[in-house]
Length: 471
Ligand code: GBH
Image 1 (cartoon, helix red, strand yellow):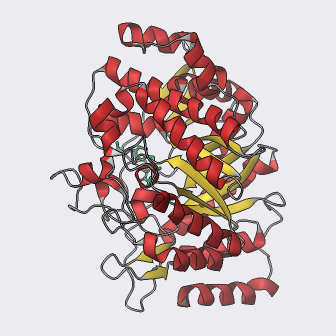
Image 2: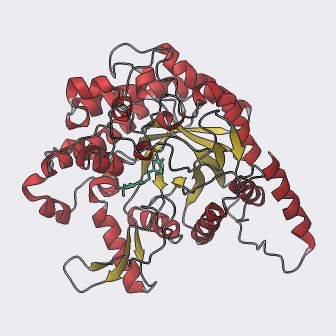
Image 3: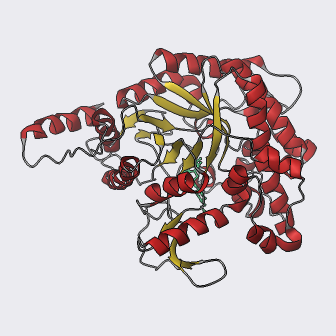
């Protein structure tokens, strides 16, 4: 804990100096600060208490799929260390925690007989969180589909999977909603479709045809809607539910009214298969025209289900996907190419663009009149090697977070209805195809010993939470 105490001592000494950098730029009262993780990335214990295999177990154990040949077999061993990990959250001062539930722990075969020991783990986790004053926010699906669903039905290529997902959602929420009041359906439909079913870079490792990809996309959106409906009938009254989407992010390149409008149009159009259909209950004309003969097969009833009303929208926000300019063309917008000199964080895909966390919630609130938004993930990877004194001086992560949170505060101060923020991630974990080579935590994890050490960014985050303003 040395890093945490040193930094806070410095902050206290600074309190009398002028000028005071701690402006009045605070977040709204009651703004919810949290951290986020997902089951396969942290739990380990893949063969314990009756858990069935998931598509990520199979994928990670396929040679060549994970850059450092690792897997989530042990990950951060959170399954056994969850009590210790909750103390890490408490040390930050977070009042909320977003985790995901592993479907194959609850239903080892995806459907059929439940495995009560699987849900017991989440019962213990939830009880321990509440005992420590931390609100649980549970994601029902963060990509760890039971392998049997892939084998028996072809996973999300089949309409049987959304149906089974809804049954699983009903089972889980009927048992947890006395204590868990907020659920997210599916984490990042877009990445699951794109990397899992088109590029083959994530489980289940498929490279489907354009028509196949569109059908999977439709089924995943349908799974979201069916789960929302199932939760309405199975969970305790007042249980809140919404998606956690990694929307394609569109930023006005220069903040003129024309570019802002163009960015909003682009935002709606480029998310047509995900948030737009969820919020509007229709595929845009441009989306269907572009898909042509590869458009998904769907019914009017499907669209009604996909757009089942939600209580909030969760947004994972990392990087600007497009800088947008107004244009005199059919679409009404043009996308500026990225210059080669645009900066990048350690993960090559992660271009820092702090204003993305201002614009994405603003567009979502404006386009669809959304009344409550959670930033369900935001963060960055870094090299994060301990210095000779044992501390991890991740000033790059602090720079990133400081700038993003400044832009988030800009949004809340203008009335964009963001209710909370979940930092990705509590601790370093299994970063999918990048194995343990990309560290996203504010706690460093030694993957040999499991030892957790706060990075300097943990102090930054704790200070920010304590002030309810960017530190
Ligand atoms: C999130 O995805 C995930 O929800 C979370 O599990 C993950 O650990 C975290 O972010 C950090 O990555 O095609 O190789 O150029 C983040 C959004 C969008 C990031 C797709 C990777 C593709 C990279 N992701 N993107 S690549």
